[in-house]
Image (cartoon, rainbow, N blue to C red; front, side):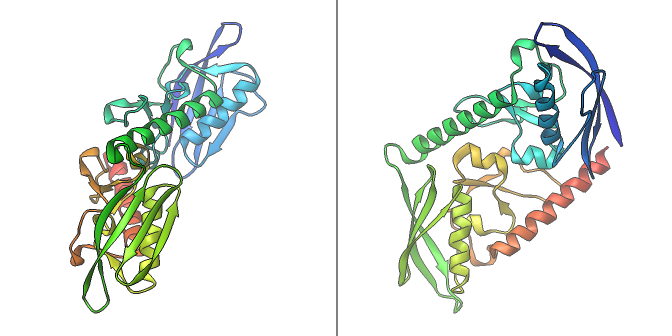
Length: 286
């Protein structure tokens, strides 16, 4: 199944050419461009946004730019939008503010010439935007401090529950310092806090221990948008056949009852099952 869209291409001399793109979704994401003579006309990628970037880079060699929303420097897809739309939908970013559903645009929609930019400009804007969110998160969570301390509980194999403490640092590199229950103090790092959180869990699982935190529930998982909203202090609650939304975010360090939590492997299996169910639901809606 494919879709054809008429788009406009802007040249460095100010002329505009009408072109057509043929868009292919799963199982192989692909974009075929016609209307301009290029050495390469077919572009594939891990998703549509990836293929779209490759198309734009080829056009840039010829001094050409697509007049599409996906070429705006302030537009970039989240991990969740890439999962759910195959990279077809992306967010218009606002410095220091998280993305909202109302900010979603189709990357092939029209954009004025003065609105679009190069791939390099877009990547630079996205990195700057992500950093602005991390700064806002740390101001909101930590105030003037550089880290936050929280009490947590740990379940032992014999059913005993011990009191522990984590010291959380969200600014790169993200890390969690864990201490308590007669264990030596340990530091767990990650690209973001949920990665550090999972590394902590895996370290405890080797000892037969389980954190009693909301972030250990199988149906709670970090999606792309939670990384850039708040450095992974919060994560999304997933529902079968339904996409995660902002209102379903919870603090991963909040207490969760023993019967609610599970291993990292069980959580990842639930996430895969959820992603598959959402894909099937989308197919049924078409």
